[in-house]
Length: 453
Image 1 (spheres, rainbow, N blue to C red):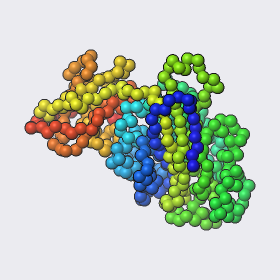
Image 2 (image 1 turned 180 degrees about the vertical axis):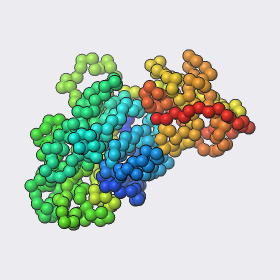
Image 3 (image 1 turned 60 degrees about the horizontal axis):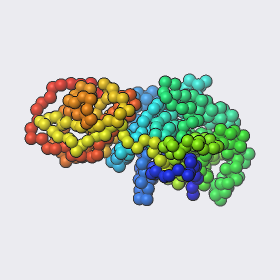
Image 4 (image 1 turned 90 degrees about the vertical axis):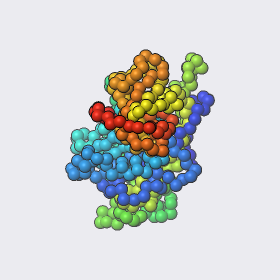
């Protein structure tokens, strides 16, 4: 099964990234289950580069929200626990009440991913309450603009017009004033997923249940409200989706694979969806196209499934796995760390790095020292403000020293990351290395405020 979206197919191919998207309405459940199947960790044929995870209806009671504000929420912690040993780093997170959006990438991709903005759009209770709405991360991936949206739209069969109105409202809210960023409809890729709450019209409960039992999904799909709405809405039609070859993902009795047996007996529906949209292309190629770098963006859906084994919620999670082939518009990092020039003297380590001519540094830039397997960008073991501890200025390579007195001699491998305050992203990363064993240490009494993202 595959669904293909093509951008300038005549251009030469670059390389491929493997992207795994997860959407799940967890219905306030705690993460008490093994998520290996959901994350495809046991699939030996899959070499993933990026995880994009969207949850809906996380517990957002007052005690839970206060706890999550002080500590990592349980779901984020679990995902980091499972992915960080595989060299995935959490690069962005945005939370609005029960909505959570997480983006993970393998550390070698970090210098080529720029987080431009994060945004929350509440649509519940006259547009002021965040139990419904969308959360968004806008980023540049190897020079291409990508917007990621996790949403929770209004429920119930009769609210279809309201669902479509909220869909449009979320899209219209995603403007980027203050950034040199094109309109969202001119982004190279929009990934939109979540509990969209679209229902199956016309057919009765018994017919729907019998069709599911016999796996006659096509008849049900044709009465799906999103499928019908695309026939009448040009913009909505531009959002693609893989074929629905799995059973409807709502509503189940908890801790079972039985559809709703309560008094309400809600009709099953494909409420949980993953859509994508590629940038519109001009009908004719520019005569100057051959004189500029050629862009190439090919997205292929490899797998679109539900995961019936998970039963802690009344929804089943849905995942989509994509191959993203692209010709990178950014192929050289703004900062190149040079671990081959590392050396230690007493309890200081001297770091050398080079920068590209277009890189604009800031006095708030910093370099973090991390153990391989770091969870997120604040998970450093030591750091240095570049402007404060620089020992060479205006030269390439630049040199800065970092205090490592608190780090015991170890055989662990480490990474250096250069964080740009202007770009709010990692713009340079070293290869893994081991810190040379030092002969003696001295106590350091200096204190500096820790950088926080």
